[in-house]
Every structure is written in C-alpha cells, then in structure tokens.
Image (cartoon, rainbow, N blue to C red; front, side):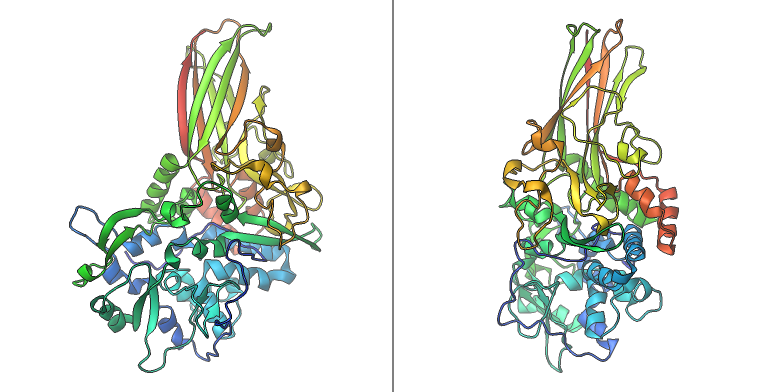
Length: 564
C-alpha cells in the first residue's frame, strides 16, 4: 500500500480559531517567529512523506497473532484523507465563492488543519496559503506535502514544550520546529514511550531524526487545536456581523461530560496491545510499549466511501468506521403497548429510548451531520401501515422540513403523534434573516441543537440567554442545547426518550415494530446546497455522489411484536 492520496476529510474550516482548554498566551521561552527559508528543498527534510515510514512501521507482527500497520491504518482514516477530501474541497470552494474578499483568509485557516505540512512550508517560504489554486495543483512544488495532508511527520513533530525558535501552530501553545538542521544537528520526533539508543539509530540514519519522549501525543490538547473552531459570521449580503458561531466545540462537550478522565485517543486510537513493538525491524525489542491503533475511528464511513472513489481503496477504513458506529455510539430500548381507551380506536404507545455511549454530543463536529429515528409499523400480513423517518435513494428524509423546503428545519419532538413528524438529532445554523442555512460563514446563531448529550452533561448549566452574540472570550454556553429540547424533560444527559402515539386501524391484530437509529455524515439539504455552487470541486464531488449515493449508516436497531 502506497499512501499517495486523492482523498477526503471531515471537519470543515473556520475563519477564527479559539482553542478551548489550551488556548493561552505563548510560553515566554517559545518564539512564534517563522524562520527565513528561501528554498523549498528543505521541505523533504522538515516533513518527510508518510511513504518514508512504511518500511519500518507497517506490517508489524508481534508474534501473538495480532497484526497492525501504523501508516496503513492512518491512511484508511478520515484524518489520513484530510487534504484531498472532495467534500472538504467543495465546501472551501463554496465559501470562497460566497465570500471572495475573504478567500485568502478562509483557505489559510482551513489549510492549517487539513494540510498543515504544505501550509507551514508555505508560511516558511512566503508563498500563498490559498491552496485551491496553488498547492492542490498537480506539479506545484508543495503538492506532495499537500497530498500527504497531516501525516506522521507532522503530528510527531508537534510539541507543547517551550522551545525557543519553534513556530506556533494555530496560535496555541503547540509548536513545530521549522528550522533546517545545521550540519551535525539532529531533529526530533516525539512519542509517548522512551526509546533506547539502539532504537534511535535507524531513524537517524534513514531520516536524520532522533526520538524523544513526549506525553502530548496522548493528551487531548493535540486534538482540540483543530477540533475547537469558531467562525466569524456574515450577513446574507456579505457584511460582517461582529458575532461568532461555535462551529464545533467537541472539547467543550467532552469537558462538560463525565468522560473527562478519558482522552480523545482512548476511544479514537484504541489500544491493541499492552506491550508490543513499534517497528518491524530488528530493533523491535528496543521499542516496546502500549500499542494504540492509528485508525482514528469516528463516524464518517460515507466520507471514506467517497474518498475511496471507484476502486474502494479505503474499504478497510469504511468497515472499521461502520463497526465503530454500531458498537460504540448509542443503544436503543423500546417500550410498547396498545391503548384501547382513546375513544377513536387503538393507539400504539411506543417509547423509544436512546442511550449515548460517547463522550461528546452525537453527532458531534461540523454541522452537516445528523442522526434520526426511523420507525416502521407492519400489520400481520406484513403491510407497512406507519412510517416516520423514511428516506429515499438520495438520502432525503421524506418527513423532514429542511429536506423539503430550503430555509426550514424540523423541530425537536417530545411526543410524535401526527403524520409527517420525525425526530432528527442535529445542529441547525440560522442566517441573518433567521432562516436555516448550510453556508458556514452565514451561520449567525443556532436555531436548533438537540444532538444527543453525553453522560454528565447538564444541559441547564450550559445554557446561554438567547444564545446570540458569542463573545470569543466567554465560552459558557457555547455547547448549549437549543430549541424545543431545552424544555423536554426526557432530553437529558446520556440520552433521550421520544414518545410515539400511533393510531391503528380498528381491526388491527398484532403489529410488528422496527426502529432504527440512522446517521448521515452529510445531510441531504447540505449536499444539495453544496452541489448548487458550480465549480470543478463541486463537479468532482457530484460525480462521486452518483457512484456512492448519500445513504445513512445504521447505528442501532430494535424490533418488537405488540399483540392486541
């Protein structure tokens, strides 16, 4: 496997970043100055490509029947597809088309997380950070670094130690050494475990790097740099509002939960061995330690399908992500009976409880994602007599206001007792006209955020009065629940209960009930709006969507038979 990419990513960008938890003043001993570099010839020394790591860090067999490949696992993750993700590319292009005067700033902020190696080299060599028409182009001198996105040699060069001369990463306490090594000088890679002199020698000989122990790779701070994002908002006429939207505040959701003792890595980079080798070379015995998979599993199986294109080259990642969604996201519990006392015929009383298994909201991250409850009721002959949350071959939820009407959205429900109602867990941005929008920079406030809460997240403690006019220095309420879910007594930390009251035919006997919790990385309305902005990036995405329809992934399923 050769990780040279044409790939895809998740998290969309933001114009302004505030780091939650680790946004702080620079350490006094660390400089954020950028070294003066006149030639890109040093880029291979500063950021060797992931292909340089394959020889020693793929196909590791520790002899106990396990097998892991650090580079291959990373390549099959959404992190490994961060720079050439067609969804990412199309969204960035859309935002630059809608806000041409801010195009350079938009691309620079997006590039800093999605293609950090190419971006930092652009900074170091005084080149444009507007990657869409530069580094992303085949033949550009930064294109190989662009293709590699944020790979091994970036994450393992980040440090939170105050090192004089390092360049700050996204204006945080994290930094990277962008200085070319002088003759006889050794550059450093950081890892959680110490390594012996014997283990260091192959790295020095092959790449000119030695290794040094650092705990930041297992600390959530390295994740929150890019996963706590705020956007400056604009009116629909393109004027700055002076307000910010918490585009994604995963760290705040996590800190508001009972999962604070578990780092991001404990779930998304799960351990595979308590002690094993990091290398497949003869020095393996000198590099023993706990092995964590570099699979970065999350919820975006569909994005990996798109990134895999026609050849399904990322099927390993798709499978791992789907399994993760179905085993470690949420569970369903049903309670059902038939009420004969309504006076207007039998009524199916169906209570659907969702229990969260994750340490942040579900779905979390960029506001294109949604989960919903799909309920079907069949009579004894197998005919469908009721459905809520059905969808078509293009991923449109048939009952959803947002999918049917641009600018509208479906409210949160405590009780569903009318046709056309569906429970959708999502965050919905509103523009300056008060309409639902899928344009990131036109999102002024949230009109709805009923994403399922993690255990320990007290929604009333997170509320902000009116939830408008975000002060970037005041993060209280930035992860708030918004909309009807605030008043729903059953929408609480750790889950939600939705009560379905379904009128049945008078002559009904037993009924079969099937309930699914479904997830989409990209909601139908978001995709439709995105593809409505003609550009080469949109066309590439549209062609991929034709090959891979935007269908939801099953998270959980329960069935029951109710006898009258």
